[in-house]
Image (cartoon, rainbow, N blue to C red; front, side, top):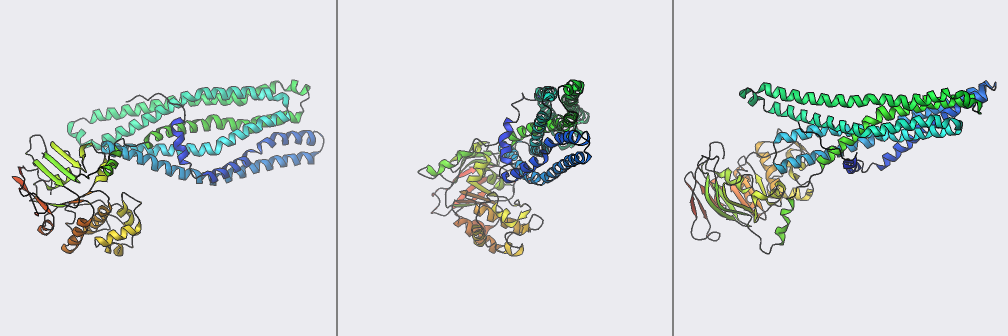
Amino acid sequence: MTSPSPSPPLLSPGLALLRVALAGSLPELGKLAGWTVVSAAPAALSGKALALAVDRGFLARQPATGWGWLALFAAAAAVSAWGTRNAYRPLARVVEPARDRLLRATADGALRRTAATRADPDAAAVAVARITRQVEAVRDGLAGQLLLVSHLALTLAAVVAGTAALAPAALVPVCAPLLVAIGAFAALTPRMARRQRELFATEEEFTASALRTVAALRDLTACGAEQRAVDRVVEDVTANEAAGRALARLAAARHLLVALGVHGPLVVLVSTAPALLRHGLSAGGLLGALAYLLGTLEPALRLLVQGLGPSWLRLSVAAERLAGAAAFTPEEEPAVPPLVRRRRRPPALELRGVDFAWGLDARPVLRGLDLTLGDGESLAVVGPSGTGKSTLAALAAGLLRPDAGLVLLSGLPARELSPGALAALRVLLPQEPYVFTGTLAENLRWPDPAVPTARLREALRALGAEALTDRHGGLDGPVGAATLSAGERQLVALVRAFLSPAPLAVLDEATSHLDAAAELRIDRAFRARPGALLTVTHRPSQADRADRVLHLAHADWSLTGRPSRLPRAQRRARSGAEPDGASQ
């Protein structure tokens, strides 16, 4: 298990993330602050009301006056409860949107990092599971801080001010142990923060270990490594338990701080009561000071030590870790913009001496393939199944790396480009495209949600796909993989690709579920689209319409085309075969 990293300053890494989460909530924060003042202000009246009820009421033989001050004391408590009740509505309007913003920011960062680094897909599941837990911790902690911190500060100020006004001589006995308790709590906080980080780290390690074990269950059983996997998971559980116990031991010390901060002043005040009474403190003043201690200060300090302490720690540590998950900017993304500044635009696709085989001992699928596809050109790739057509499409899209040779997209080496840069230079449509559950417009706009509605309708008309909107309730109609036919899924993906600004479109049997008329219209639309077109097809009619045709066979490949597009001599090279099922 990896040991926790050194503790950074409390909350500093997550402060910017929390500010983003709270953006746009200033009106509701103002309402929350107002109701907090209403709930905390009556605390300053409680001790004074009791003192006057005793001194000017019952001891002065004026019971009506005494009951009147007691009624004021009860009214102040009712106002405080009313203010607390009304504070929860603006609190919810602040915390719930903040939770959604945090979840979007951190999940997006984690998934982008996984995609950019091409990590194990299980890493994304681990990251999202960890983020969900920590976002909930931030949500709960943030709610506690917003509701209670200001209330606690106002309450402590009311106790000190009320005691000073009621019995100045009792101020030192009350404040001295209180300050000592708060100082001890502050000194204990960094150590508690370290323990909280250790608890989060062991929880993450346990989650990752459990997910890895479940994912590899069949392999573990086949290899007879079940006990080793169980031991590893138990080890992580034990580490998590130890971290939780260490944090719990520190939590027990908080009870001593409550005793020091509240019962210490109480003991001092009671023991010095005779001297205070001899120096002019009234019986009502002494009772009011006791009321401040027991009725106001004790709940406030207990809230600080037992409530706000853990909440603050969980909030700070979770926000710190979420800030690291949310912040992600791929370093190599800016590789595309310099293309527009070049004097001569390079070909959309260029293959130089490309070799590829599905294994060290396998026969090459492609060998010595040279190919250039410029702007405005179309190429059809044909041949029997298993000759490498889909392999070539994956190589052209940068999804596979050649064993030898070079694949260039708009003049840039495909192997050096990030996923984002690849998406900007080429769009790939497989035979079975991806459609997610959402509206039709959301599927068509993915991954660019800023595409105008007019542009969507224009693309639908160009590809003859207007019937999609008629059958599914318009652009805002709900669709999904289960509600769309195979042909409709291909149409959705084709419109999505047609809208892409990428200079190269690669269609791998992308119209196999459509009829000949629809295929003809789509083919014409893509040939008129700016950029180059590479089409993998079994249909002779589609190959006949292309500017050039690349014929793949188990023995060789040949490139043919129209005289206006090709040099007179045809290029030839040897080729092998790929394993069954690797290509269409």
